[in-house]
Length: 397
Image 1 (cartoon, one colour):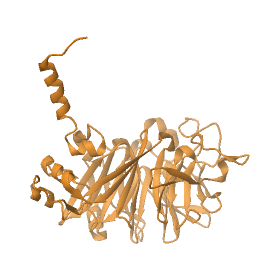
Image 2 (cartoon, helix red, strand yellow):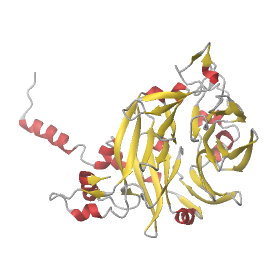
Image 3 (cartoon, helix red, strand yellow):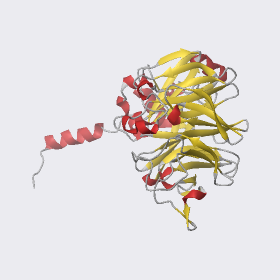
Image 4 (cartoon, helix red, strand yellow):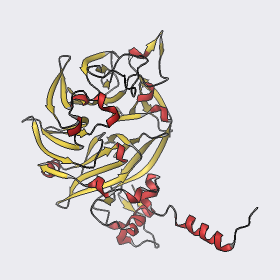
């Protein structure tokens, strides 16, 4: 056995000592987190994008799953502000107003469920320059406070608060699960179509059950899927039929109440109306008397939906080349990755942000800017790792 020299040992130990020092790497469990490609932040902003965000008084969070990135947009001290957080393949998000917690699903294998809470104060310590931490008091950035691991086969997609409990689409189980405080999960709902001879098929993804329109209970909620037929052709297969095969299930009956959709995503209930992104045709629409009604067309694969009293924020994505067959109603080559503001009175786009190097949007969530203005790390501002280290060293949420 070769005995290393002291010089060799010093070199190895110095390398180990230098690793995992950047808070951005540690909180995202990613040693490349401090080197996010700046091209991913480039954007074209048009119309009343910033004016709408300012008028609503919100911080808008967006997950861009294939770029492993979560972005936050707000107006801070009268200035447009963008912040970010690197995360492995982020998908569904939801905000729990009761606990002021933002939950984000990370769907690499194994899946993770991240929980964030706003920074509220810091511990007074003699080994910290307090002004470095106090600079965050007015902005209340989100701090990760927990990460829960679940098996990769759950394939978490949408997240939603139903009642007082956090629920998620376990796409790999064709079911909706409730996330428990002890780190476990329980299957709580599934459509009747996966039951064969009285036994539910949880063994693999048959339906792409991918979004939750959350009501006050599971029975008052609705769930979208790419099909209601269990077959040997499964989501991900090139011969998996998608055109007009999508459905929305009733939580109460566990049967489809709407048919004829194509890869539907982001089902949401707003003012007692059920809305949905008809992704494969680049549409936002709603359900009227059991029928899907197109409301507006957008320039890409629609996924991600946030509705307010006056506007809707809708995500559009590019289509991964190998999945072109899943978008029969789109001009795939002209699709863009972005978020679009839809005036619900005028039924038209009034503002957008488009990322030319972007790929796919998954989820959109709004939080009152008084609660948080986003993440500690800002786009376009040189990082102060000393400030960030002080923040994560002594934060209180």
